[in-house]
Length: 305
Length: 300
Image (spheres, rainbow over the protein chains, first blue to last red):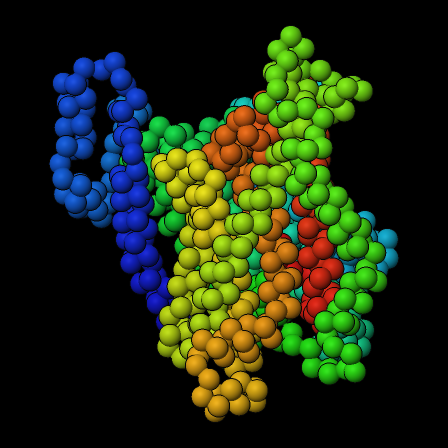
C-alpha cells in the first residue's frame, strides 16, 4: 500500500506541471488581457501596468518566472484586485467554500445512506419506492433550478431564512441542501444497489444464522461491503461539489472561492485564474488519493491480495 | 464505478430469438420507460418544430406589456421584454437538445475509439492509455470548460467540442471493458487468423458486439451533457440572447423570480422533466439490454 501511495504522490508533480502549462498558455493565447478593458487609460499607463506585472516580457520568460514562483508556493499578485496576492485571496475564500462543501457532503452522506439502506431492506415495497422516487427527483433537479426555487419558497415567500448571504448560521441551510441534493440522491441509489447485492451474500446469512440482531447484521457486517460503491463515488463527488459550488455561491451570493474563480475568468485575471485552477487540481488529486486509500482499508480483498 | 456492471455484462444465453428482439420486448414491458420515450418524443418534436408551431416570434418584444403571468394569449406568460415564454421555451429546447445530441456524438466518437483501441491493444499501451483516463478523471474539467468558454468566445461549436471532450472518459472505460472481455473470444481469433486488418476487426466485429452498453451509456450521457450546457448558460457562458437555451431561461428567471416566479418555474420544470425522462429511459434501456446489471450502481 505504501508503494501505491508513493507512486501516486510522485505522479502528482508532472500532472500539476502539465496543468500549469496548459492553463498558462490557454489563458495567454486567448485574445484580450486583464487591462484591455480600460480603454480610457493612456498608453503610458497601460505600458506601466504591463511592465509592473511583467506582461511586457516574452511569453516563455513569463512562463518560467511563473513556474519559479510556483515552486516556492507563490501564486503571484492578482491583476485586477490590486494590492492583493492570489495566495491571500485563496486563503480568505477557500474556508467558506470548504465549509459549504463539507455541509453538503454531510447532508448527502447522512440522508443518502439512510435512504439507501432503508430502501434496500424492503425492496419493491413502499419503503423502497418512496425514498427512491425522491432520489430520482434529486438527480433531475439541477442545482441552478433547485437553488433559486428554494430561495423563492423559503427565503422570499415564507421568509424563514435569508435569501442570500453567509453571515448567520441559518444561512448555511439552503446552500448546503441545494449543493447536497444531487449527491444525496446519487448516494441513496448507490447504497441501495450495494446493500441489495451484499445482503444476499453468504457471510450475511452466516451472521444471521449466528443469531446476531438484525441491526448488527445490517449496520456492522453488510454495510461495510455494501458501502464500497459509495466510497469509490466520493472522489468524483468531491470534484463535482467544487463545480457545483460555482453555481450555489452565485445563487446565494456566498463569498467563496467559486465566485472568485468565475469573476477572475470574466475579468481575465490571469494569476487568479491560474492560481485557483492549480489549487482545485491539487485538492482534487489529493482527495482522490485519500479516497483510494480508504477504499483499500475497507476492502479486505484488495488489502490482503 | 459506473462501468463495473458492464464488464461482465455479455448476455450468455443464445435464445431462439435474437438478443435485440428480447431487449425490445423487455423495454416495451417497462411502462415508465415507455412513458419517458413518449414524453421525450413530444418534447423533442415540439422543440424541433419550434419555428413553425410556436405562437409568436422568439425575438418579438412587446415592451408596453412587460412581464405578464400566464394568460390565454401567452400560455406560459411573457418575460420582462414582453417576449412569449412558451415560444422561448420551445426555441430554447431546440438549442438544448441540439447541444445534447451533438456533444454526446462528439464524446461518443472519442470515447468509443479510444476505449476500443486501448482494450484491443492491451498490455502496456492499454495501461498507459487507461492511466491517462484515470488522471484526466481526477482533473477539475468543468473549470477548463469555463476557461475555454470565457477566453475563446462563446460559440456553439466550441461548446459542443468542449463538452464532448469532457464527457468521453466514462464511455472510453466502458468500451474498453467490453473489448477486453471480447478480445479473446473465438470469433475475434478467427478474424485475426483470417488476416483481417485491425481496423476492420475493431469496427466490424468488436464495436458492434459492445453496442448494448454503448447505447445505454449514450442515453445517460445526453442528460449530463444538457446539464453541463445549462450550467454554462446559467453562469452566462453558454448560449447568448436573443437565442435561448433552457439554462439561459432559468438564469433569467432566477434573476427576477421575486416578481415574476413563472419565468423561473416553467423553464425549470420542463428542463427537470426532460432530464427525468432521459434518465428513466437510460435505466429502462439498461434493464432491457443488460438484465443482469445492477441498477443501483448506474451512471447518470
